[in-house]
Image 1 (cartoon, rainbow, N blue to C red):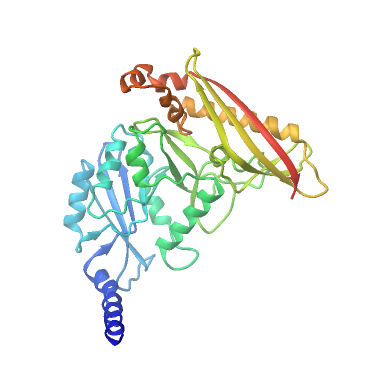
Image 2: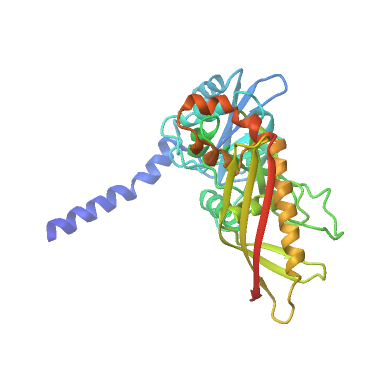
Length: 371
């Protein structure tokens, strides 16, 4: 027993000494950013905790960057110019500027990031409007002290409410160009609040990161999603559209709608939607049956028919938007591919073209009750 206690105490002592030594000998990368200039040059930067006091603007974290004609060249220069080895095992975020995300080599870029030594595959991928470096610089732990913990909690909060996707680097590498459901990445932006106003907004959730109608000391926003078309980012989805997608998937926490009398209904998913893809029709028919529950304030019943019609109209418009972006972000392809016995037959369908020109039929079943 005494030997066991001695051994445990020794292990605790050794482990306690690892962190300071690691900070002394390595740069623990919390976030990696990738940007591309108009001339095609790639700039990468990393954000890591400081191990010594500094008089800079952000004393807790430092940023190191390098550029090159390709991502590999930029990373080689970054490693060569950094005074300590880069440790990516604690990376929480991969931030990619919109110009880099819209290039045809976007999938290859994700694969190259994933191939970095000891890179944390579960890191969240954020596509940033403008430059990713500017987004990373503006990101600070306004609640708590550790940026890694702050960002992880913030991203989980927005994804849990339904306003952003949960796509990680692993998911993006696996699905972009290889799966039957196009990945949606978190959309991020810096809001300078120059366009914000106190005027009433019809649906504040139907906005993109960088344009939210709010005022705050925190300028960084993650809201909505970057849609992909099997090759690269092809456009953006609003926070409301992401909430509708999560409602169809069977999970949403913060979706509230108004009826014609300004009564509020909190909409929840009763269960995942029923999906059918009718390939025998020309054009193909995408059918969605959505099951919802609504909770309203006691004494203020809502117009159930109005809300049902509004949801049906908005979900139809959302799917049409995905089609226009050539993005099968809801995964209709997963249902279509099951109707084929061979890969050859599936490829002869040319699914993406069939999907983009398909008809859409949405039905909504809503059951309302007092909260």
